[in-house]
Length: 388
Image (cartoon, rainbow, N blue to C red):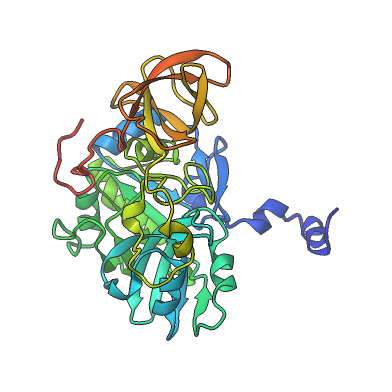
């Protein structure tokens, strides 16, 4: 059944999907007839754009890629912003400082992971939470009763420049304001081609990189894009869909909300217990987490003869003990890799298991810790500058 708004859209030749989901303000700079789009946090993004994803992967690892990503910043402001965020997030918000990003989780009352993202403090009573996929804005509004806060959408679209050349690119783009002194997860306002924008040294690849947050209608998006491309071209930067990013985020141990973790998994089971401040008096899910099993059930799997795929089974002998949440070929390791979610905690790491693909084929595999390489995070921190 088509509602009245949809009838008006049809009369005006407006796509229903285009009305429901946000289009990127950068789309005319990278759209092609081969583009395959996905929807994430209510926003369209390029899942595939006809490129050689393996070539893009090596450009990411050796030079730099620019990604038009669908991450969605939400603004939380007002006199009660800190106590409110202390209620809905597992981190201790009163100690959050301006100029630094903080990875933070939101849990359900049952202790399951509802959302993950990065929190930025923009002022004494003003924060941005850059959410992953899911209806987090609605969740915040639903829990804001009794708090003097405003939940709003700043309409900020996010660009990521990732790869070992990203510092050189951002240095040129910022006329020298951004340099080696900007540390991992540090953030602040910088002028990029005459536009003042918020920038953080972070990303979704575990490569050295930056995220640039636009300022809604105040930003000339196409001018910004052209400025960044001009700054990046001498260093070999290219545009890419998210395929190369997906490979690197899995290699780097970065989890995807609603795919690798969800409301049926606690932060401890996901290996994210370090981001839960149980010493806080109260936050949503704390009571359930007090007595929760603190052991991890989400690990890595490597396979030399096949690439794990979502829904593949993990067998211990003939016993079904877990499933694959996401898998990719790792060009760096020359192996198939994936996230292995076990039904129960156990001594799984280091063991040989059977990976059963959806087609029924079986392959020997090994359970490992994540990330799959660079476990000390030397690449993303800029300590390891060796180009593969």
